[in-house]
Length: 331
Image 1 (cartoon, helix red, strand yellow):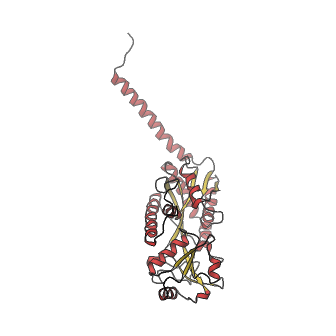
Image 2 (image 1 turned 135 degrees about the vertical axis):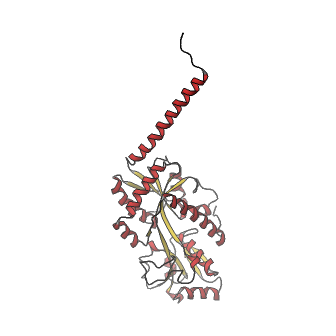
Image 3 (image 1 turned 180 degrees about the vertical axis):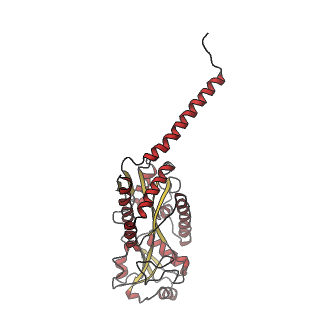
């Protein structure tokens, strides 16, 4: 008589076969992670070429390429406030070969747009924080301001008359100024410019501007400007003679823009960890540290988990700032 199997035997064999498949798959994942990378890594930059985020990322990833023996190919996808680039990565294969240059703007974009082609909190896995950078409070020489106290006194003497420039609604220059406005309890008018408005400040048509430090180097010695403060807790090594907003008496005005890398959310944890470690090793290289310092960037040293917590906290803080400042969505 031919052998026959009871239903329980079939279930048992099916379970064992399934368990073996799952076990093999689980074993394959660490193996693939150990092999990563075996080809170039595509890095989507949602920002224009030459922007602070683009420049900082290139400095770090040039070094990371040498460490892993594979190029990090930066692909510019600017437009729609960064939405085009972020959406590209959100829907990419989660295999560690497509990442995005993430930044503080991920939170502001969620404030400015009611709908996005991606979810900034659910579609990305934070990988590594590269560093943070303050903004520099500059004023027109024609204003006569010699300190933050002078600016605040003038704003309170004539509410609603002083103006500040920004690189657009939700930009770091705008958010830094809003934090300062709320901390100092002053009534000033926002004038956004596509190119930042620094020329208008130098001409004396706009009173002050919180320019990102990474973009400020060439402007800080302009005779038509006066540098009043940096929006960080301590003085910047690049500007040792310029007080911080904390020293000026406004600790609640601290604002720092951050840059990092994020991956599609389902990227294997082992691959994320390796990408983090490689990037952190590049950041810790003395030559990279020196170049970041010249850009006004303070290198970070966070674990993957710490960066994820940092991202979540910054996201909520930015949304709260937007609410307090009355910043509305633009669509």
